[in-house]
Image (cartoon, rainbow, N blue to C red; front, side):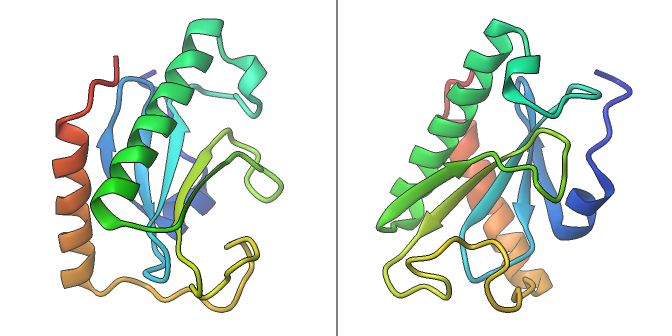
Length: 140
């Protein structure tokens, strides 16, 4: 895992939050939506089925537990978990809290309007909230 690097587009569009047992957890730089990305720290993987069975289970465990914690702490009407990979082929899973009337509702968040980057204070606050939520989770 030491040679893992997230795709340059993910690095450009998001901020690292922490390392989970399988994934790097990143925060998308769009304050319109509570939006995380889980990137399995496996080189050369673009599809879920390319992971070992235990890693597939771990990916789902991390996505669902992070999603539940995010929804419980920040509220929201719907939790979206998706892996698309049409623009960035490297396997990554989006975890997004949606709210009725948000900037893209009811459509997908991808490609809707212009992202609203976090200012440094809001970024630090969101990162601290996320880290507090992750600390209490059993992810193994």
